Image 1: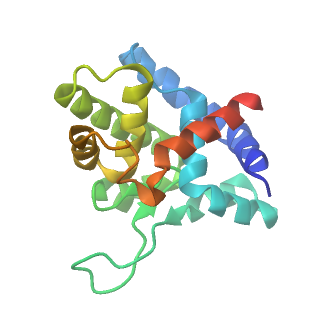
Image 2 (image 1 turned 60 degrees about the vertical axis):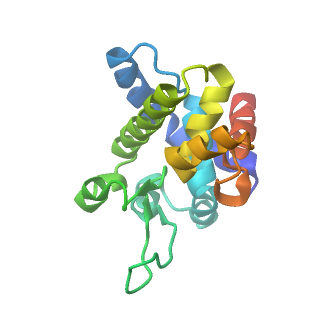
Length: 186
């Protein structure tokens, strides 16, 4: 399974869902900066390995949706290992417990809406703290913050470090941007 095949699956199976969520969000906020390729790339970065696994098993999309759980491990203060990320965009149970516990994450549309909401929260925070941050720099910062939190992105910006310095594998937004290019080529 290649990256391009998995991203093509995301665009085919989740693209209409992403488009609907973006259309509704942009009706409320016409200046919203997110795009289908951006959200598809994030879904791939977050759950591409799971998508590829279930595609290889010829699972139908509706069977795959409720299986999108990740970030399995034991966090400080927890007694045992558990999943921490839910849905194609890996909504974090620590940050959004009500959403995750409701089971809404099993619905890709609801999870996409939540991912847009999370991104917007990161954007608003970063623009408040760094009003000069615009364009691609802002977009990359928001994307990095989706992965490691806006506080960590604030720290790297203040230190003049690479925007991905505190993201998982130190390449989150860079990889999302690479996957966006693949999505655009399909």
